[in-house]
Image 1 (tube, rainbow, N blue to C red):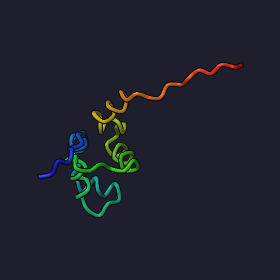
Image 2: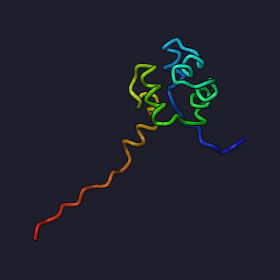
Image 3: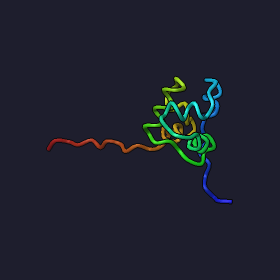
Length: 88
């Protein structure tokens, strides 16, 4: 057993809602087999940004709908604040 963290997602939910099999999604993304889809759904790997957008298009959802927990974390992250400068 490894201590690799599982990446929660809704890929399986949206795939089943679309009445698609993993092999259908793999074919739509131009992949030879469904192993990668399985890894993504099980949270042991993440799709590339390009594949994330392709998945969103296949399922007709927004990309952040596929990884809502990750999106929430990113939204809460502190972003650098602009410092005001004054003219001398």
